[in-house]
Image 1 (tube, rainbow, N blue to C red):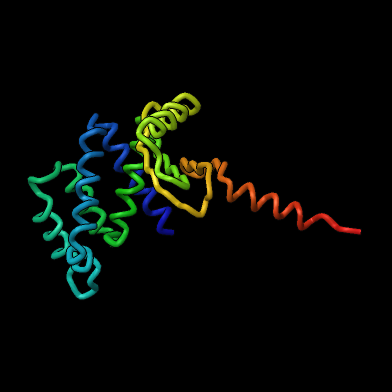
Image 2: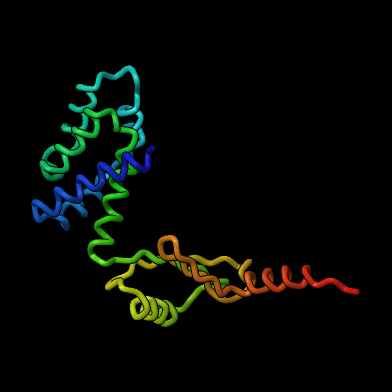
Length: 182
């Protein structure tokens, strides 16, 4: 249900951004608002508190964000609160940001290796991804997991390319378990 809510509201915000030709501006503002919610858990608690009146929550949202972000996004946030979807704001903004990235052909890649990659290796991986996908730009996220033993795992959305030594050993182990000795 939460996914449907974030999609519905996120799509509405995206359509508004297209209509007003403010995709880039709303994208930046949505990221900033997300950061505010991450850094100020008291604001989230206040919005989710059942004993605080809905109108008071709307006034809080207006006071916090008015003159700091566009009227369009402030109005959108007040609608979300008015419709009692305040606990979904973060997910809605997250969906909207991913929708804008898709629209702007910005991919988000998660690259895991057994050892730290050099800058040259990172550039090579990014170039290879740009050459083999329809994305024009990538947000690269690198991490190290020594348990991989070697190789690389790349995740973009729901697609995963796993060429790690660990996965190859696991696959080989499964195949060996199937062999019946006579």
